[in-house]
Length: 96
Image 1 (spheres, one colour):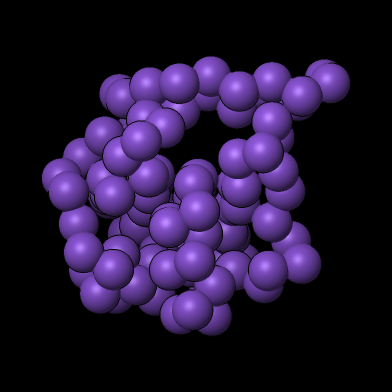
Image 2: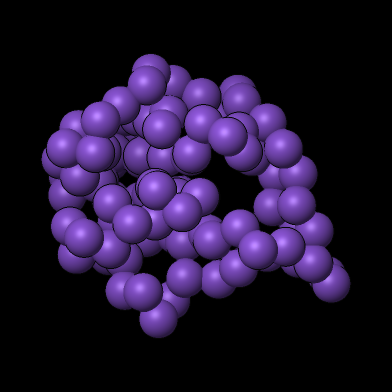
């Protein structure tokens, strides 16, 4: 998996994406999921590194089966909130 972190004035944004789908575009009906390498492709990261980053994140964008599984396992994403676009799971997390 790839993970990229953005520190924006004390807020941490984390983008996580499965390696197999990065750079691809998925569409289903009116929904489009573009997994831009410029946004998602950071360093390769382990499940533990991703779980640690997500637990500190203010905002997260997560795409792919492995990435979503990490987010669900660490309690950052409720599995009932995951959407599927052309079969690809996607979730966003925001801490208010």
